[in-house]
Structure formats: structure tokens, C-alpha cells
Image (cartoon, rainbow, N blue to C red; front, top):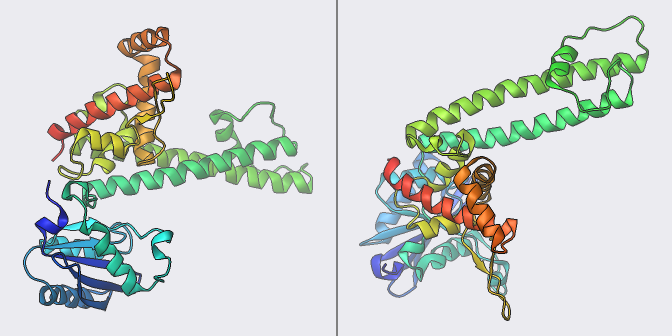
Length: 348
């Protein structure tokens, strides 16, 4: 694949902020900065920015935007609508700032220079909007709901163990008990602490039950959208609405991930060398998209428990001396390869 300097005549580095974006135009042939301007984050401001880009550059133009999914999402959409390709620009590392300092203009130039010498196949392209963005919102919402539900459950268990409310609290409360607690009413013989604790227990139980309903609805929506984007993906062993959603958000669209090896690297499932002396082995990769890695981990564990073919494979590899973690690493790499190939045919 060609380098950025070979394919594009100009790179526009964009440092994004809540109120203004700063744009730096870099000539790829000379590496010279031929202009730098700041424009407000408003429809009129972005129209002026697009006009400035047209005046400051000629030929093929590439935009390197910081935060395409946060502060830079609006300009990313405008640039895409104008058929200007957009890639994600990573902020410069702290060591690179030594002796340089930091301003919006410096950061805009750094955004452009950061992609200048890269192979075009190695560029990070923004994720697609539409249904995929909706799945991303649902997954983020699910993580928040699940976290808060766990906090409320733990708080309720601690409360009924601390203050006697007539419950057997030796074990964690069951769902049936939560329903009963949510229907409680105040009792005339309660002490002051029991009265306050009972009110709090009712509130916590109701919050947990409400979160259960929201998570169920969330899962149904994920299943619907996942089936719309990739029909049949959820039919595989271990792939449910949540794991499928994480996979689809990371994969995004055709062209974002250039190969199955790149998809495995994105997932942190590509093997890393861990050899020494006469020992030749690989280990788990702890980098990459951790949500995607978690989805592959869930799929691998499910298949190791429930899929007969996978269980036989685990037994065979265990007999060869491989550890559980090494076998799981191999399975995650295999799953990444299999799912990537399926997505290439299933998704739009």
C-alpha cells in the first residue's frame, strides 16, 4: 500500500476543542505548514473551515482529526459529506512535546505530521455512524446500567445484614426476595433505624428491578440491530447480542480493518512472542480494543464449556502440555479469524 505522502498532496491536521477547532495545512511533498487557522464549532464556522481547506490545499487531501468520536465528531461528519477522507489522529506522546510546548496550533500540526509518513493501510479510520453508532450507545448504556445495578445489589445486601429487617441475610438476596422487598410497607413496630433502613431497602430493591427491565430491553434492542447489520452472526455458539454488538462496533464497516490479522491485533488476540532460551511460546496480548477482546473471551470460554468440538480440542492441547491461558489465547485468535471472514460477507 502507498504511503500518505505518495497518495495525498495535503494533510489537514485538526485539533478539536469544545468551542473551536484549529486546522493546519501540511504540504506532503515538502512537509511545510502552509496555513493554520481556528474556526468556531458551529455550522457557519465549519462551512468557513471547509472553504479555508479548499483555498489552502490542492489535489488529494486527507484530514487527520483528533477525537473523531468526541469533540471531532461534527467536523468528521462534515468532511465525510464533502468527500474528504478522514483518519483518527492520535495525540503526540509526552516525550514528543519536550522542548516544543503545547498550543492548539502545535497540536494541529502534530496531528497532521503524525500520519504523514504512515502506510495508508495502517491509518485508523473512524467508525461508521447510523446503526453502528446506535449499537455503541446501547453498549455504553448497558455498562453503566450493569455497574449501577451491582452497586445497588451490594448496598442492599450490606444493609439487610447490618440492620435486622426480618430477612435471612446469610446469603445474597435472590430475585424473588427483591420483589418482596420492593412491595414492603412501613411497620408500626419499627424503630427509627429500621424505619429509615426499610425505606432505603425498598428504594434499592426497586432500583435493581428497574435496572433488570432496562437491561432486558437493552439486550432485545442489541439483538435486533445486530441481526439487521449481520444476519446469522448471533447463531454461532457463544455469540449473543452483547458480544455481537461489541464485535460490530469494533469492525464497523468494510475497509476499516484491512485483514483478519489486523482484526486480531485490534482485538488484542494476536499472539505475542514470549520465548526464552529453549522455550518457544506465545502469550496473551493485553493491548487493543478491550471491549472486543472481552467479547472474544466470552465466546472462547462459552465454547470451552459447551461446544463438544472445542472441548475435544482443549483436551488434546492440554495433553500436549499447554496451559488453560495458552489454549484460550489460541482459541481467541481462531475466533477472530473466523468472525472477520464472516463479517466480510454478512455486513453492508
